Image (tube, rainbow, N blue to C red):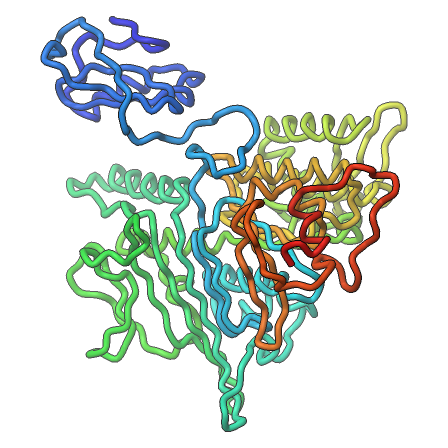
Length: 545
């Protein structure tokens, strides 16, 4: 064995990538995240730190079986992501995880006549005054997630977060637009460019491998190899017939430049000759056909991972979208003992979530409580008790003060428990929309909440976060960590304008003085002699809107 850096490897290089993986499988787990192993024929193996950009060069002396260490020279080798310590820089670091949703277009939902958000990172911040339409974007995103998993479009509209009533309401309330004849022509459309979460791809490919072994097949199943997709969904509502239907759907693979791959047939497309939707069968020559209009999306109906692995992967990613608007009154209430893998859209399942985490993932639960103890002064334990009738209640224990029922705990602490739970869940959602993290939170706790979200967004395999706010404190805390969009309400509908940078004209007075408040800008704080210079302060002054 020959030692180069922290790894011990054989003198002769492996003959194939398979043997290379077997060699690497014996490396201790502590070394896996710190090095990148690159191998090509006739090259030896070396360890390269992820952030140096070093690469191996092939030299005449580096023959097979030679004990001469390979040379390392600087070049334009592609860098890989690493768990680099420290805070986030002003620019998006090269080691930052890829976004899940890279581009989002919503047409015809509530106040969103047509909005397009592109260039999205793993952390997105939407700011603007009340009633500008920020929440409508999260509602639309949540509706897209329900359309990918519910068995009918009607069920998706009833259950999604945009339905504040919690019951069936007129569907036309969610649509926007009329034609010139005065007869309503209600249409709604989504277009989303996504980067497939590696964990979803790995789970599907792993299931296919297990099935192949179980059935002892010689031919492998088609695996998920594409990672970028564009999905489009169109819905229509006909008032006379009271019909809510899916009127169009497509799914295609994208290249690195964001353009559709011509070499790959779309997974869902409209077949003009057949007059139906054609859904690609990846193990057969001919597609499946679905008629339009229909009562549900193809993504929610097709679950055959053998013949539609890519389609199922996209469906699972979109189905895992979650939107939260936590309400302390619901977090304080007793809940039934139903399994809950997240705190729920309003935080109502907070006690059930901690109960599930404690019993199913005790190590993760203990780590979460230890982290909360560092954020909440005096907190020593988070406990869930089951009452006589089977309901679950949340209790907080503080050093020197005793135990407190959730009804006696402050809003800020409950919101911190909820955000920390969302970030620590073993099965994170692909996309998380979180409404106004500043509500009911002390500024010191607000910084902690923003830090939790930022750390969860930068974690490999974690969630993409979309936050709405009208707090300049949140903007100042996250402006250099997130992709920022200013939201304004106009007669033509809601407008989202990207904020390019701190030293550039951002909004060209698109918002009035005091953009984050309803009315006049707040007076300066006499106890704060230092003028604030963050993006939030500049927007509040009206410098950029």
